[in-house]
Length: 185
Image 1: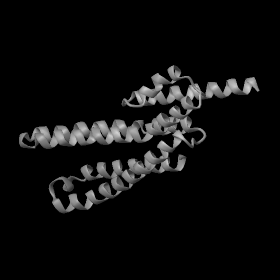
Image 2: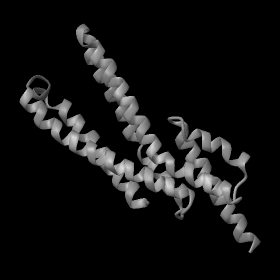
Image 3: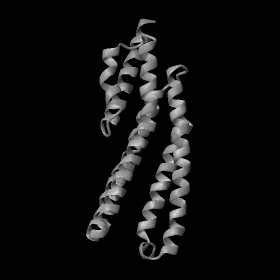
């Protein structure tokens, strides 16, 4: 699980770096040959990240029946590591949308890019959230946690930005449960 999430995170960052390079090279914007040449790594890295994301979704859903140890801690760390990615992604989205708004007939392309950026961002959020969602369902199903104690961090996993807060809440709750278990033994 940890290796899958780490590799997913690495490929997401590599995709973003190659996308930034695409727009950082001045000739790439105006020359189709440079654009296509620099777009290939974005597509390849994005495809690898998408495949790793799907594999992570499958392993995340397996947390309902076969949970891994330290799920909350790993997911919390990955979500916090991805915060700079989301900030850079937001800045890139605004820049791309602004570039297309400057040229009026390209405004629709700017809207399409903004929607694609938001969908990609939400997909990445859900890939990391699925582990917490399914593991919390396992913990409630096995009566290790109460339903009402898990509802707020569970719902937070579906909302951007709040998912980081929810991950931290899950981690704190799990850590406190382990402390209470050790004291009782």
